[in-house]
Image (cartoon, rainbow, N blue to C red; front, side, top):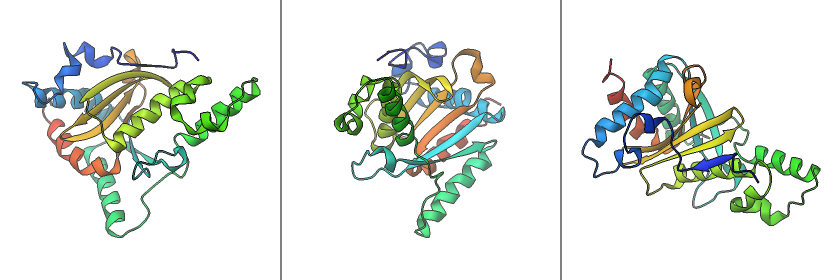
Length: 228
């Protein structure tokens, strides 16, 4: 296992903006809402206006389930706030009509997990069924630490988390990325950005559970015009 695949609680882009980002979004932070607006403007609104923002909506895990094959998702390019509102309405209407929620159909975790296990076994490593079934054991094979880091992020976005903010780094299918995760009174979401100057030319990924679309719409709308 190589810890270069992923690291948690590391310095990222918000450390260039805030003196203490881990405290900037807590409920006892004096300028908490201002910090949220600044963060959203820099990490979400700017990429959106550059047409480099992708919204990933996840769903499927319920009642404590965490089976990789049950986690569903769909990605939408966001070029404007109107795009976000259309996505929220799409999910709202599906719920109201009791229709299946929109999904790409492929798995965010199951297929990459199968590929990583197949590669490890081809290299001579034996992966037993218990290791396959228990995410905490995935770091025992190459690529597993990255998958476990992403699994934990998705799991916290579905089932919530006490920490208001956490910063991680992870190797993804698109390359090395910073993960900025937020669990706020206003809503819960993660933002995955390319490191360094690449954030200006490559896509940013905004991830949230479908239940968070309406609450995030409110704080998102307030953040868009503040610094124009």
